[in-house]
Image (cartoon, rainbow, N blue to C red; front, top):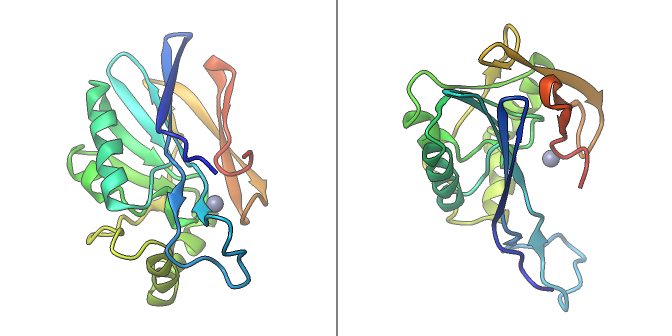
Length: 193
Ligand SMILES: [Zn+2]
């Protein structure tokens, strides 16, 4: 099995620039019980999407490991936009755990999810949940853990709506997707793989 490289793609639609960063597959230190040892155990690629207007931007989903989150932070900073917030599509920490550095470098930016997603996100940050993630990625998790808060009000970029939809179950429930109305684009989180 080859390991895909990080890749990025950008589209300019209706005055918004939508850039998708696809993280590489990550080797797992401790595969699940019963895993065929002849096969490499890998964590799947993860997408982070930056929806940027002329000056501001919103990031949809982040990453888990400290080192890759720093690369993600550099990518967002290089956009030249003011990061207003990070929206997390669902409660799995591989979509937000490593974002403390990015948020610290983005004054005023917050980390949010829908209220109904918050309980799973918070539970995964407790000791039992973190033990699972630390077992998957030993020595790779950040010292400071990012923790989302409940989104209040609309999600938008410079007045352009990012419509959040609760779609029920993907790899967990509840999960959400983001419909960028003006660009006719759907940011699907883990609903589509
Ligand atoms: Zn997930």
